[in-house]
Amino acid sequence: MIELSKEDKLFFFERNFVTLDGLWMLETENECGWDRALKVDVTVWINLMKTILRRFQKYLNIETNTLHDIIKILIFRWSIEGWGFEIQKKGDNEIHLEVTTCPYKESMKRNPERHHVIPKICTGMCHVFYKEVFEDFNSDLTFEVTRSQGLGADTCDFKFVVKNDNSLAQNGFVKPNITLDDRLFYYEKNFFTMDGWWMVEVEKEVGEDLALKIDTVVWQRLYKIIFRRVKRYLNITGNGIQDLIKILEFTWSCEGFDYNVVKNETDEGVLHMTYCPYNAMMDRNPERHHRIEAICKDMCIPFYVPALEEFNPNIEYKRTKFLGVGDDVCDYHFKLKGD
Image: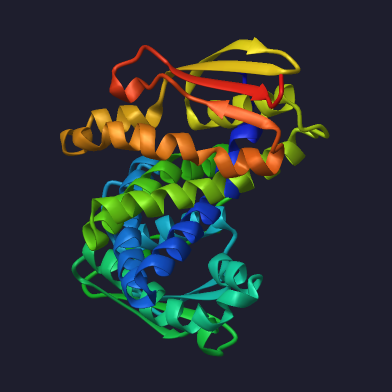
């Protein structure tokens, strides 16, 4: 493995977090239609946000679930993700967060093909999952969105009311000074969790076989994007096998793979993966054991094919060994065609 800086890892996880979520939504919509995809999306984010709240409680040393606590956690997450907002205290038991910039809405605005879904995401997604998560966090809390940018307003208004809660009277708010460690904690921790929840919920909705197909396409598209991003980040100008290995080493090191570079020549490259975090996650879950072989062979092999074809169509790619079926390594063999 190569040694990565915190900045390297943050680049990888922060840039690809929203991309991964968006690709899951798009491909689920392509296969199942808008209504079913939105249903899955809401469930994924309810589960993910509940996990995020628990993680931030521990990270921020928060031991209670008051109104002050939920606002503190939310503005911490929003500050990491780049939301613009103002805090408006209305009393000892009511507070409003006025959102001026939503990064998810901005992401959809940059894609003309997604403009028409912005209002649907606001009402069918954002309003629904936040209400579920916040009111689950504190059963005495009432939450509503009174206006939304996606519905034509200048700002979004998130209104929180909790009866018999004097936490706001006792504590004020200061927008957090987010550090590199804070951002890395958020994106690295939740990148894999989000991907896992998407797979679980899509499988519940459409069954194992179609979920496997969607998962494969998502990661095929993601790796094409990752290859392009990493190539620019590392200032790689060529497209040979040694350039490819630099990209894979960076990507795999970020993802947490253990591997050895067995051969790194201009016409041939061989890498042996000795530990796969995705295989390890499935191995820890008895309910996923029966899918390990299919995921290793039916998904992992084609993951890289579109990215490799775009990077250099003259590079051949072969696999013969798989950790998921009991081999001691996963082997990746790259060779220039005609050699």
